[in-house]
Image (cartoon, rainbow, N blue to C red; front, side):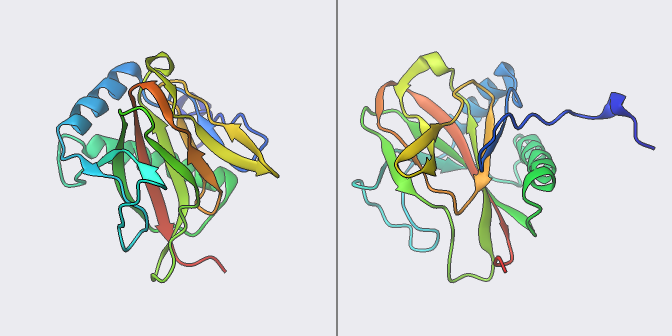
Length: 198
């Protein structure tokens, strides 16, 4: 039986091809994620879903990857999965099968960026379909490093910067992270994968 007292109201709050859920993670949860992220190995960011090439003219920053078998971060995978399933049902209804990974992104050095790109993967049995970004840092802790999403022509939407907000969009949607001016920005990035679009 459906009972609204036990439901969560989805808040996409956008007329565009991307959606966001504000305050999905609390301040304490963001702190907890950042602490865990700083404890995992930091790697130079790469491009490509199979070749993993380092190219600082396209992308610059550090990343790490959470282990889904780690009992300390299993709650994070569970939370990400639930939100993605809910938002996919509301917006895209893609045929999806698994969460590719959860990446901890670190923009710490002025100039760190990721130029405009798509997250689509090709030449594999399954493709990225939904991209996810979680704002972990307080918006006042850094300047620049905005997540921007293509609208039309040369226009880009700026994703919300509020801490704990989750931004979701189809992986074929062009987006970028503008250069960091000052401070530090931490975020999570993940991709939901499924059979090729038909």
